[in-house]
Image (cartoon, rainbow, N blue to C red; front, top):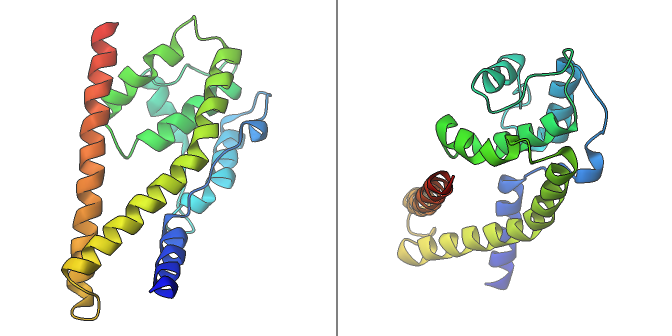
Length: 190
């Protein structure tokens, strides 16, 4: 059983495989759009499903700027502030709507949020990402174990996988609802 659990953990880690952008890897220099997209692709490539996928495109950046999720570039150049905001957008865009991201980003785009404050916030977020990864891994492991108790893989592997996927979907749906409610609370306070 212990060997089986280790195998499951290994499989989950391979499938979860997330990349992180360490604060010290974020350059404190201006860059053009192409350099920015290359930086994001290079640093988050482990998160791509297909090899030729793009983490960020010029169209996305222009859209984020147009929707006021991102300040406009200065003389066609993007800085560390832009990179940090784009990393936050990257992680949230598949979870919540652009409207909710806009509400969430509002305090980060505020004039009171200078570059150093934003960078410090990012460092704090980064410090919490790795421990959270292990919480996620643990939650996924528990869901797999629950699915295996209800419909053991040996009896029907496809139904086992299906119930596992439903459990993960319910987890994501629940957390998404919580995020949306928390964003609404933030928005009402402002």
